Amino acid sequence: MNKKRTVQDFIDMKRKGEKISMLTAYDASFAALIDAANIEMILVGDSLGNVLLGYDSTVPVTMEEMLHHCKAVRRGINQAFLVGDMPFMSYQVSEQEAIRNGGRFLKEAGCDAIKLEGGTEVCDTVRAIVRAGIPVMGHIGLTPQTASQLGGYKVQGRDADSARKLLQSARDLETAGAFSLVLECIPTQLSEVITSAVSIPTIGIGAGKYCDGQVLVTHDMVGMFEKFIPSFVRQYASLAAQIKKAVSDYRTEVREGTFPAEDHSFNMELDAKDLLEE
Ligand code: KIV
Image (tube, rainbow, N blue to C red):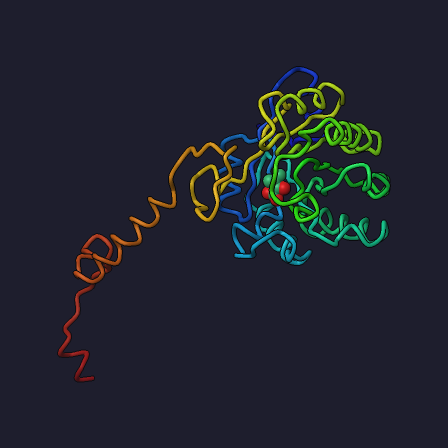
């Protein structure tokens, strides 16, 4: 696929019942691998705070950190649609600040869209950003930036009242102009209802099989991030184990003098005595 993907492509995919695949990336080399597998959307998630930067949550992540990684990912992409995640406090203070920060993802980092967390309460902000010409992906359910207000990293929408609120949030975000919605950690039955209630694609993470697409944190699904593995993740590889073995084998061979071998060395005709006497 050489044609650049657009928001309309994802609306069409939903209409045709074609599932959308999305993964996170934080650097150019991972982005290139993901892009080459024809994944339709790449998200530079603020999960980079946990996965790459060693923070305990996504809260400390800054605009500058996000832009730095979005620029790198942009350089690795040929075909995927690139979404940049707005960090905590980059869109909450005022609509003006939200538009300015959202615009930086497109102007400075070459993103195609931004994502922000929140439901009905962020709809005025979403409307303002969309009006400024910036495509917005919503994110409801478990919203990690405000996890402490939600009682921690827990499944959301399990009782009738909160399920109704999430459905209303999805509808309000669509009305505000969001082009798609991440549904994180909500029951399968609720995400099925939400997915059929909105005409924009839903992208699930821990939200079951009825969403229009799925997203995972790449480091989780390739088994590279060992600190915490959410139960909804399927690991398609065990890269952490492979990397640890490779590194340990390297150390052994360096200590034993079996690396580097002839194949990894450069040779020349040299008379050492002549060289030392000069
Ligand atoms: O930050 C992130 O990676 C995300 C996804 C988990 C949806 O928001």
